[in-house]
Image (cartoon, rainbow, N blue to C red):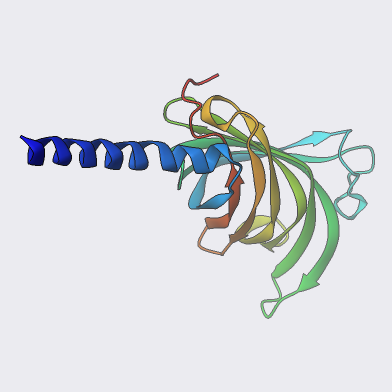
Length: 194
């Protein structure tokens, strides 16, 4: 009986250690790695007077606001859908090896993104330093490829990500797949979507 009692005591200690130690780290404010990949499934650009004007494109009284819907998969979230919007601020237009293709580089400003996990928990992001280069075919401005890079700051969320903080660094290749990595700090004991 003593052997059985000792085995049960060891099992209880192990269960408490495993069951309590991991959430305690998150509760103590330990940032954890956060990474994933995503792909845009829909995007549009609309004129917006709150965005910087783009005289290079004949847009003097308004600029362009982009919005996008994105599907992804990330650590701590699993599969998610993202909605984002941002203004385009013209930086440059350069020739490429193809005389019919130019590379247009933009700053992405007023950038806001919400990632929503399958259970409804969300993470909110705002843009930091973020640029995007579009390879477009002239004169129709047909988009051929996009390369982007920049940092997004985590500024809260809902459910287990309420009061989340941290940052991620994004890169997007011409294949259209955006990958990111960084750190997130959140209270893993929050379970209800908010």
